[in-house]
Each structure stands twice: as structure tokens, then as C-alpha cells.
Amino acid sequence: EKGGFDWFMRKEIFEQPQAIADTLLGRYNNRGELVLDEMRSISQEDLRRVNKIVIVACGTAYYAGMVAKYAIEHWTRVPCEVEVASEFRYRDPIIDPLTLCVTISQSGETADTLMAIRHARVQGAKVIAICNTNGATIPRESDAVIYTHAGPEIGVASTKGFLTQVAACYLLGLYLAQVRGMKYADEIRAVTDELGRTPQMIQQLLDNAQQVYDLARDLSSINDFIFLGRHVGYPVALEGALKLKEIAYQHAEGFAAGELKHGPIAIIEPGMPVFVIVPPQGRDQLHDKVVSNIQEVRARGARTIVLVEEDDADVEAYSNVIIRLPRVSTLLQPLVAAVPLQLFACELATLLGHDVDQPRNLAKSVTVE
Ligand code: M6R
Image (tube, rainbow, N blue to C red; front, side, top):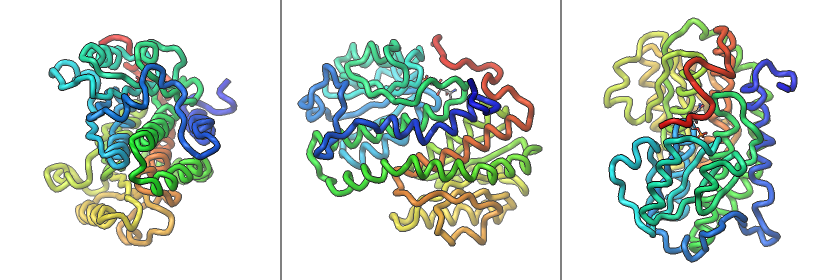
């Protein structure tokens, strides 16, 4: 049933091109407009009136929500907050009938997330669930749902769940932009086309898995890992660190690259592996700023593992290892950048002899608060 793979997790990582393709399938009509067919009791008029979006989720799904915030605010100009579900309802959040609550859950059964959406609905907010499990409690208790079509995810560490959540969040952001008036019509069309090409980009990374496996072997005696990213690369850094903690039981931390100088750079020691996700070239100054961050940690002896788009030569002098990513726009980069980090965690945990699919102390779905 693992289809020739040693772990469900590895199988699920390799299923991602198909999972993304399936999640995108059938979402557009013949005029190229997005059609989300389970909006149920949420009308287009409701979506036009929304003045705030609140995303609630846990763990990896929360990181997908962080990616979504960047995309949704950029495309819709609607303020968007993202919060871990377990914090949300206990701080008396400001929600009203003009708030759209978006919840993300692979299982659809996470208790913290369920409690958060119940709270949002009591305050009059409409709730859209992004979920991978048909008929689970969270989509049943929501006003609308966008199902990710990843297929069952068995490995406790979420992989295809994450990527399809990110893709579904983009669909939601583009849909909101479409319904509310296409201020960014050209960009939205371009993103739609590009999204359609991401399965083949992910496949390209999977075809190069051996490079990442070799890296895991080289780093198998290390116990501390740092991940840096900026903009949508920041949640990818957090996700890369979470994967290592979950299944390899190694200390790993993700930081916003710009925060380095505000403290975390003090922990860098010679030989410490620092993974850096570099934004594509040519957008704002993000790329150059992250390249400077690589220089800064390198100057302190870090071993830099740099994830960067294929024709970017700016990092070569400061990288110990370069993992090439297919060319993609900044907002969509998480769909490719997360993949080598998943492969790395899976391989490292395997080399360390851990049960990758059922890590200690963790359950696939956390049904208690
Ligand atoms: O089923 P959910 O998406 O609601 O689960 C949320 C988290 O418990 C989950 O993403 C957890 O962090 C994973 N084990 C991460 O790999």
C-alpha cells in the first residue's frame, strides 16, 4: 500500500504533483473564470461586503494560512489576519458579520480549530473551510468549503496536505479578487497559468531528490538547524523546521530573515546548518536583502544551504550547498520551496532510524483541545 516507498510520508511527498493537479482540477469555467462550487450559504454579495479576513488553523495548516495572508491581502486589499486556532478565541477577537473566517485543516477534526470556528460563527462571521477530508466535522460546521484533493494523508507529518492547502488558499484569494472586482486582472490570469504549471515544477524537484538525500547523510550527526525565509519564504522556513522537529526529533528553528539581526544571529556557530529560502530575483529588494543575510551567517561560520531559483548566480560565493528551484513568481514559491525541506526531514529521520510515519508523542489528528 506504500506503493514501493519505505514510508507513507515519502510516498505522499512524491504524490504532490498529482495532488496539486487534482486540487486545481475543475475550478475554472470555459471563460477562464474561477468557479468554487461549494460556497453553499456564502453568496457573492457576502464576499463583496467582507471587510476583514481571519484565518485560523494549527501547525502546518497555520503555516499555509501565513502564506495565504500574503497572497490574499495582495490580490484583494482586504485586511487579513492569521492566528493559531488555540489562541484565537481566548483573546476575545474582534469578529462581526462582515468578517470572513477561513479555516484550514487537513483532517477536518482538529479540536482547537473546530472551537475557533464555532466561536467565529457565534459572533456572526461566515466560515469557509479548506479541508482534505470529505464530510469531516469542520467542513460540516462551516458555511462553505474548498476541498483539497490530496487523497488520504497517512503520515503524521503533513506534506501533500500542506501543498494542497497552499494551492487552495491561492484559489480562494483569486476567487475573492474576481468577485470583488479584478483590480489585478492581468496578474491574476498570469498566476492562474503559473499555478497550472506547478505540478511539473514539483516533479522536477522530486527528480532531484538524491541531492537532498546526500545532504541529509552529510548532516546526520548535527542536532541544531536554522531555517530562514522572508515574505512567503518565512512560513516555509517555519514549516521546514517543524518537519525536522516532528520526525527527526532535532532542534530546528525558523526565523524571518530580517529578524536575524534582532537576536537570533547570536546563536550561529561555526558549522551550524542554516537553510535559506531566497526570493526570486527582481521583486522589490527582497532578494538582495536575503542574499545579505546569507553573507552575514556565512561570515559567522554557518554552513549555508541555499534554496534559490535556477539561474540566480548571486548566492554562489556564499553557499555551501545550492538547491535549485524552478523559476516561479514570489507568491507561488512556497509550492516549490517546501518540497526539498520535506525530503530532507524524511531522509534525515530515516537515517536516524525513527518511525517516520508515526513519530513519538504525536497523533495524526489532534481531537482534544
Ligand atoms: O488536520 P489539521 O490540518 O487540522 O492538523 C493541524 C496540525 O495538527 C497538523 O498540521 C500538524 O502540525 C502536523 N503534524 C504537521 O506536520
